[in-house]
Amino acid sequence: MYLLPGSLLLLIFSFSAMISCLQLSKCNNTEVTLIRNTEHLTQLALSNCTLPHLANAFFVRFEHLLHLELQHSGLSDLDDFALNGLTKLQYLSLSHNNLSSLRSWSSDPLGALTNLDLGHNVLCKLRSNSFGIYPQLQQLDLRYNQISQIEEDSFDGLSHLKHLYLNGNQLAHIDGSFFGGLHRLSSLSLQHNRIEGIEMDSFESNTHLRSLRVDQNLLSSLQFLSQRGLARLVHLNLSNNVVQQLEPSVFSKNFELQDLDLSYNNITKLNKESLSGLDSLERFNISHNYVDEIYVESLDSLVALLQVDISFNRLTTLPDTLFHVNTQLEEIVLANNRIGEISSQMMLNQNHLRYIKLSGNALSDAAFLQRLSPSVNRLSLYVDLSSNRIKSVNLSSLLHFRYVNLADNNWSCDWLVANLVRKLPTSVNFARPWTVINNWSENTTKIRGIDCIEGGSNRSIILLDVSGVPQQKPDHCDCGVAYDETNPSPPPLTWPKIPTDRFDSRSVIIWMLVAIAMAFAGLRWLRRFVDRNEKRKLGQKMLQNVYVSKVQWQPISPL
Ligand SMILES: *[C@@H]1O[C@H](CO)[C@@H](O)[C@H](O)[C@H]1NC(C)=O
Ligand SMILES: *[C@@H]1O[C@H](CO)[C@@H](O)[C@H](O)[C@H]1NC(C)=O
Ligand SMILES: *[C@@H]1O[C@H](CO)[C@@H](O)[C@H](O)[C@H]1NC(C)=O
Ligand SMILES: *[C@@H]1O[C@H](CO)[C@@H](O)[C@H](O)[C@H]1NC(C)=O
Ligand SMILES: *[C@@H]1O[C@H](CO)[C@@H](O)[C@H](O)[C@H]1NC(C)=O
Ligand SMILES: *[C@@H]1O[C@H](CO)[C@@H](O)[C@H](O)[C@H]1NC(C)=O
Ligand SMILES: *[C@@H]1O[C@H](CO)[C@@H](O)[C@H](O)[C@H]1NC(C)=O
Ligand SMILES: *[C@@H]1O[C@H](CO)[C@@H](O)[C@H](O)[C@H]1NC(C)=O
Ligand SMILES: *[C@@H]1O[C@H](CO)[C@@H](O)[C@H](O)[C@H]1NC(C)=O
Ligand SMILES: *[C@@H]1O[C@H](CO)[C@@H](O)[C@H](O)[C@H]1NC(C)=O
Ligand SMILES: *[C@@H]1O[C@H](CO)[C@@H](O)[C@H](O)[C@H]1NC(C)=O
Image 1 (cartoon, protein in one colour):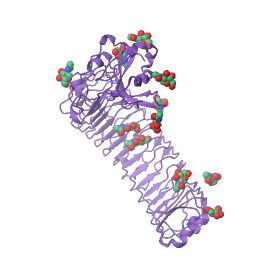
Image 2 (spheres, rainbow, N blue to C red; image 1 turned 60 degrees about the horizontal axis):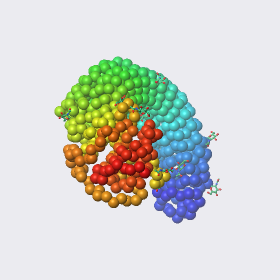
Image 3 (cartoon, helix red, strand yellow; image 1 turned 135 degrees about the horizontal axis):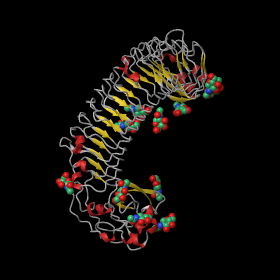
Image 4 (cartoon, protein in one colour; image 1 turned 90 degrees about the vertical axis):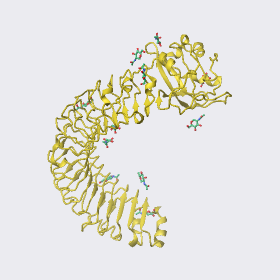
């Protein structure tokens, strides 16, 4: 492929008789007419040129072209026969131009054309029989135009069309007549329009439709789904609409559906009948709605379900038996609700579960992990309990999971001090990143630490890993690590015992598990990111309670 700007071309054209692909940018009309030896040219790509107008028979010398692109070139006007002669053309793109109307542009049908891209133009209206001269078209791209009107029979004659892109237009209503005759249509993109209503017979003749995108529209009712034409749908995206309720049995005809995305709607409830009929559904996403109630049997028909996402809703409780029929589940996402309790019964029949995501809820304990049903394979289970309200956990019950994330909970400082001095396997995480200001450089540094609560809302931060912090000068210490990183069982307590009488809400304890080599001077910057609430109170007192390293721990004297 050759990519050449402007006038250099002329030279090359005179000599290169065998060029089959040519890509030009920043060209103009004159330069295109000077292209010679076109008999071997099968691909021509013109981009960022200045070609507002194409005269009749402009491409008639390029009769061997299979692939023609003319993009980003301000094209707004083609004479009626500008595309004459392109009888072998299979792919034509006129995208990213300024076309406002669609005509045939050729006296004979472009009988070989299978792929036509007119996206990113300014088309407003499709007239009947607009595409009659492209009888073999399989893919038609009209995305990001300003189409608000589609006349009856606009797509007439496109009996081979498989993929139609109408996303990013101004359609407000889908009429029964729009897609008539598209018998082979397999995917239809209507997202990002303003569609409020879809007529019941809109897809009557599109019985091969497998994928339908109507996300980012204004749909409030889903009754259209029960029409015959949508019976073979596999992928359905209804995200970003304003659906408030799922009428009973609204999906009863979509028994081949595998993917259903209902995220970002206004749904408040899942009833017993809401999802009935979805026998093949594998991925169900109803995140970012207002669901506060899930009826106990509402997922019972989803026997093939692999993944369910109910995050960002308003759930406070879940029925214990909610997932009992969904025995194939691999991923349950319940993050960012207001769930206060999880029953261990909920996972009773799960053999395949790999992810359970519960972050951002109101859980106050993780006891359900201890009593998980034996069918659950803990070693392959990832559990996210971050950003809940857990005060303490039974550490030994967490050891045999693939991963347990416990960051950002309401840890009691007393409990942490008494228990977390043990090194946990890397599959259990308590820490979250903190950004600190480092006096040695302008940059902020990310470190990992745990915060805990003592006496109401006052927080203290415990640093776990300061290895990422750039150091001023290397220190000399015996940095031997006492624990075997690969040993999952908690090693014996070898940490210095921290005098609890000195641990109060104004203390900051610093444990350095990894970068033990820190000079006293290196601790100066730590003063800057200590708890905001306590900042005022920090001073001599804090510094008396700073502990460094497990090997060489000692109180830091005031700086
Ligand atoms: C086309 O571009 C060439 C140089 O790139 C210039 O000499 C010529 O005048 C241009 N023709 C038109 C019609 O603008
Ligand atoms: C053409 O212009 C568009 C935007 O104006 C730019 O994104 C694209 O990279 C350019 N392409 C070439 C081949 O210069
Ligand atoms: C697009 O075409 C219209 C006329 O159809 C013209 O007024 C406008 O300037 C053109 N815009 C660009 C970016 O070429
Ligand atoms: C549905 O569409 C939204 C955009 O509206 C997109 O973010 C999401 O990934 C799509 N869902 C699926 C399952 O492809
Ligand atoms: C959907 O919910 C949002 C947020 O509560 C609200 O602003 C919007 O008006 C609701 N739309 C409808 C149609 O109920
Ligand atoms: C569900 O949809 C939301 C919003 O589009 C997306 O962020 C999330 O990743 C989806 N969930 C899954 C499991 O794909
Ligand atoms: C902690 O969990 C272990 C293993 O699950 C269990 O044997 C032990 O009884 C639990 N301890 C408490 C106090 O619940
Ligand atoms: C700050 O960060 C930038 C990019 O991460 C790095 O190039 C620069 O050397 C850093 N400056 C100091 C003083 O560490
Ligand atoms: C928490 O800190 C505030 C001031 O930041 C103080 O007034 C309050 O007494 C402290 N609470 C406890 C329990 O120490
Ligand atoms: C966190 O725990 C403290 C007691 O340790 C309690 O007063 C506070 O309300 C808890 N916060 C939340 C958000 O549950
Ligand atoms: C950190 O730098 C600021 C100015 O950038 C200075 O005021 C402060 O005293 C320094 N802190 C320490 C502990 O050196």
